[in-house]
Length: 378
Image 1 (cartoon, rainbow, N blue to C red):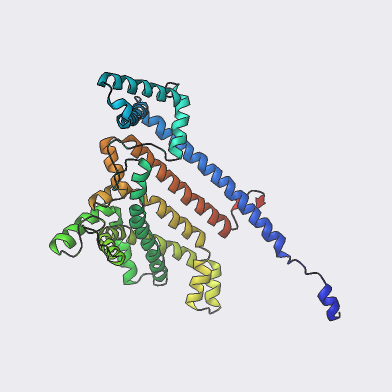
Image 2: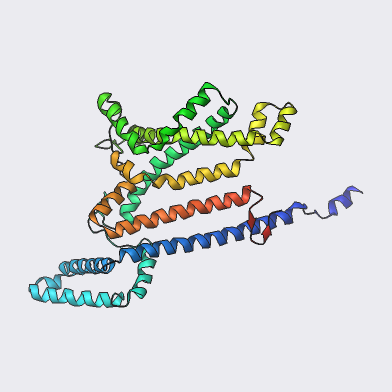
């Protein structure tokens, strides 16, 4: 074939392109279906929370009291009403409240009103908190939760990521040293994870804050907060050391023990024995024949750890006076602040659904055994 003929010959599409597009289409459709299913689950969970919170008409009383306060503020701020007598002002407030109640449909049956409550909760438009306010003085539920959420994500996210990676790599090393002294020590220490993180936190505060005053006993940053960003970050790390250590000690040994057993099971597979018989280096066997096939279960465990980070948030944040969502929820329950409680539940539901969604997509991409819409993976 001449160069001229070669130049005029149209470029051929690689054979793998149609298959790749089909896989992308399947994953996209699978993601859409999973996202829809998770959204429905969140909606049902939030609606159930609203239905329970309505017991005794709590939500109705809350909405009406908020309307009463907003209308009273509007009337008090209007110059035309200031010269009126108290009786006339109260009559105007009462009339405006009745009109607003009718406009919002609060005089309709609860089934209809619950749909509006649900829509407002999904949008996190829960009005004002009854007894709480944010650091900036705002009483809007959205602002209150938004200021507390980053603190919880920082502390518990860091702790779980640290525990996960240390446990996986330590377990890989122990699986190659089965029966050693270190291996037996980890097995002996595994039951210590039965105690929650806040339990160890109490002893860590006594030791490292009072007996040996190295770390602060609580809070997130020094008071007053440092002005320099670098000094502020150091202060946060200093305050985060004890709660981070408490969660690490509580979870690390049982995590190493679990992963070590998991890797030992995979290390006895026939293909691993064949790789050893071929004389492959131990590091290659570990990465290619043990770690890679176990990647889907490892990702599952990691995402489930992130989901479970909320389980001990309330007590541990109270022990260390950490200004996160757990502390906020504890105070809201004590004060019976319904909007904040519902808002926290919605936030947890969103984070839970988002974590499960990411896990589903990663499983569909990494594990060829997962079947997606439009046919199974080939």
